[in-house]
Image (cartoon, rainbow, N blue to C red; front, side, top):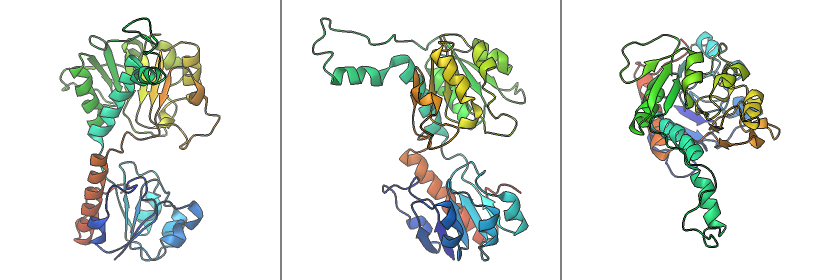
Amino acid sequence: MKIVITDGYALNPGDLDWKSLEALGELTVYERTPAELVAERCAEADVILTNKTPITKDTIDRVPGLKLISVLATGYNIVDTVAAKEKGVTVCNAPGYSTASVAQHAIALLLELTNNVGLHSTSVEAGHWVTSKDWSYSKAPLIELAGKTMGLVGFGSIGKQTALIAEALGMNILYHTPNKKTEVVNAQYASIEELFEKSDAVSLHCPATPGNNKFVNAVLLGLMKPSAFIINTARGQLIDEAALADALNKNIIAGAGLDVLSTEPPTANNPLLTAKNCVITPHIAWGSKEARLRVLAITANNIKAFVDGKPVNTVGV
């Protein structure tokens, strides 16, 4: 069995090994694959493993022996699942691997906005404490989270894990999902408008769909408190980036912590790159070593289960 990884570098930049996959067949790993080379590199594959490299209908049509596509992530929108189904190709993903890591990163972004650890560390490194007239100084206001409200848009596994951490910090929890879930303990359901209006921090934990593209727009941002923050570790397409940049620059809201943008890598003219009080990390919330090891384990199991005739984590069917 021939297994081809189209873009292995993000998952394994050198601190992991591929032994669990090598044990399953003849493994070929490409660190990155440009669109024009995908079909050529995968031409003899029985199994394609992809993270963010699109597997299009053209590629699927040009790989005659293809039997399985397993995505090295939870989101699988980079695979043409309709074309795969037409060709009898099974598509799997890696669900649940990053719950703890993404929730931790969402809170890390919030803490950076409220405590400005990076700003103060840079100040000390620049010698400002050495030359200070006082034993303690602040470059920006510090904000205590206890007693404040965290609003979570999406309340799946990552949203719930984020709620647990926020609750441990003393925060009250509001959540919004398409369908109200009355069984949730220690969290209160709110309409989307109420959540944005009442929350001191809004954190996005929902998938991107055609129906929620840029739903965080000028109207919703205008409902937020001037002291409030927005956090996004989900998908950049959820936010109208021009509207958010405008809200930040006009002090309509206090700040934003973002791990995702609508285009990745971003274009140099993305307005959020120069917006006020905007902390941006390069889509790394998923990427702890522990989470990446789980991706490898899930993927190896996906292949084994498929070979055994009992595919798991199938999507797009």
